[in-house]
Image 1 (cartoon, helix red, strand yellow):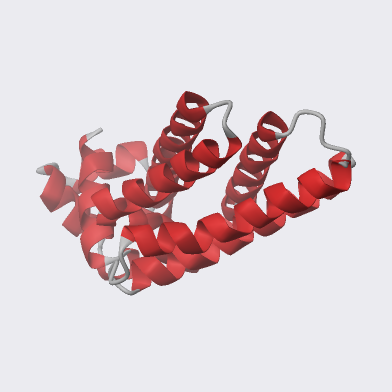
Image 2 (cartoon, rainbow, N blue to C red):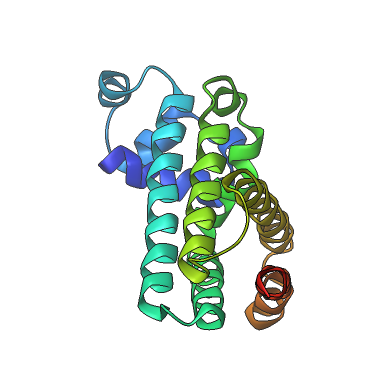
Length: 192
């Protein structure tokens, strides 16, 4: 736990590629022996941290969406708002998930990034089904749309994090919301 917390602090403030095992150990106030008893290399600790932070992010989003149910517009705002607030409230988490994770080759080699994107695709898919339980679209179509929504929000989040959160949370939320609302309207029209 000390190494994980130290990794979040060091990777999240300095960036994965600027941090050594020794830096993490100094932050944790542990010797390198403890590091190597738990992890083979820095990438292993980074992957553990990445998955832990993804879990936090996903939990915050799902909890907010469920509290706003069953009103679709409120669910959209709650889910997107929770995602964006989580990033802004902890820039370390934001940097690790949306900047460094995309660059750490080990996460791609082990399919961690791919699996994480699929988890968010499935979460958005479940969210669409919850908002519109009688939706007249195939599972495959909803799955592709969910992937597209995930990619759209991910790209906006990356740009927002890289900019240092220069644009207001409200503006970023409005940019994300518009696509979800358009989807809601489009899918509702097809039903009639």
